[in-house]
View 1: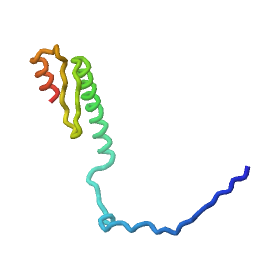
View 2: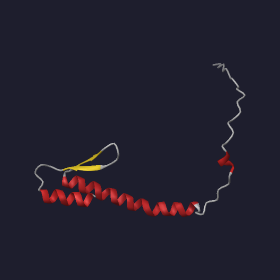
View 3: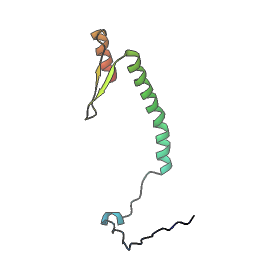
View 4: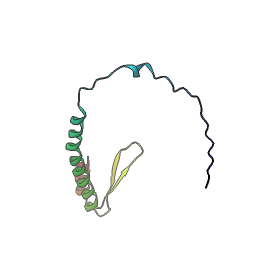
Length: 92
């Protein structure tokens, strides 16, 4: 098989960078320190997510998020008010 390709070459100059990009910035934190910190925090975040999931699943509540990211809970009708208030305090 023979393929014919049309190649178009444009002479386009890349845009010049803004003035602030010509300044050299030196980080005070080494990338390895950032990776170590992330490796420390990710298991904690994972544990928090697991606890949240288990609490929501076991208590049979619904978690509602609005467009601004605010969370609210919808508890079952048969849940006592004291239990609902305790869940509200735990989740806040």
